[in-house]
Amino acid sequence: MTYLTPYTTALSRAAVALPENPLRALYPVAARDGMISLANGHPSPDACDYIGLQDALQAVAADPMAWLYGPTAGDPRLRRALAHLSGDQPDSVIVTSGAQQGIDLAIRTLCDPGDTVLVPEALYPATLSVLAACGVSAKPVSEDADGLCLDALEKAFQATHGRMLYLTPTFGNPTGSVLSEERRCALLALCARMGVSIIEDDPYRDLWFDAPPPPSLWKMAGESGARVISLRSCSKSIALGLRIGWMLVSPEIAPHITAMKQASDLQSSGTAQMTVLAYLSSGRFDDWLIKVRALCHRRHDTLREGLIAAGFDAPAVAGGMFLWARLPERIDVSRLFETAVAQGVLYAPGAAFDASGQGVEIARYARFCFASNDVASLKQATDRLAGAARLVAR
Image (tube, rainbow, N blue to C red; front, side, top):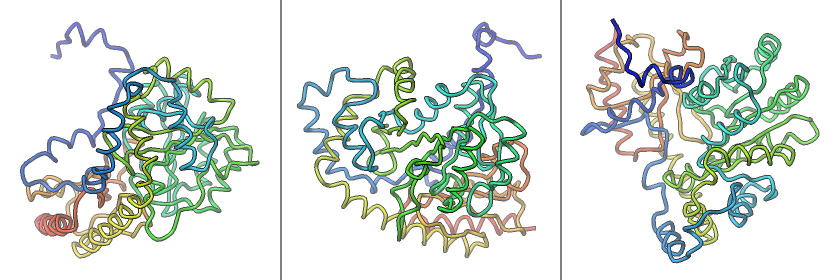
């Protein structure tokens, strides 16, 4: 018999229904002595320009204005600097506490409880948490190697009358896929025709290897009539702990997003905003980003080589932080994870990204992050993973 405490019975339906984020649940395992984690979703410490950030923080600490309240939409100077980064107008920019808050604000502003949001079938699980907290349902849409399948998307629109579409079209999480420019055009036309707004989650855009990705959906929307909200982030390119991101929104929706943010947190940290501004104003960012891209490229190649040697099918990606690999047919998938952990290596099982909650095929996949470890650690991790795969071979 289950006994409910007074606190349990007082919880809201949204709190009770909130799904556990399976990736956050891996943090205690990643913290074990000697564990090499390929499950993380963030860059390694050496991808952070500590010298430049320390200088920026020292300058900010001496400014009394850094410790005061500021505008809900963000410090005007930072909005100008972020607009310059993405080639936009400052009025389009709303500063957020990471791109994650941008998802929440977009859903709360444009959806009602009971609405349906269409999502990729392989989905970053924190997005599902946001949808559940807002009382919104997720409808997964099938993908191929190039991203969302448009035929499946149109059928899903017709079947569910979905209110919005959420996707990461550039270096997707977990798949690493990039939606082609041609498919972006077709997707925008479809969403405009169906009257569906798009949330473009775009935190990995700057982390390309050899060539820039296609233009963002926000940039391409133009005369298509599609309504796009684009989410960007400083977390992957400047520093995770600052928790500064930004939304790109149309003039019609900007006041409503701002009002919703004011109801949520009044403003993102003024101190963090001014630190980002000081760092961007220092002139160090462009050169540092070049170093980070090269670092990620080398680590991508190292991890992929090791996964292939271990028998995994690991297609190359053109940027971002993740490889989405199919596990060898010869192994028992149900035993691999615990065996790998026992060998001292952690990865993110494909089931953690299953938007439907009942996928079978996705369980044969896993996400591996190449950005969070150095080359030596990646080689050691794939050696351990290969050993684990041998132990569970059928």
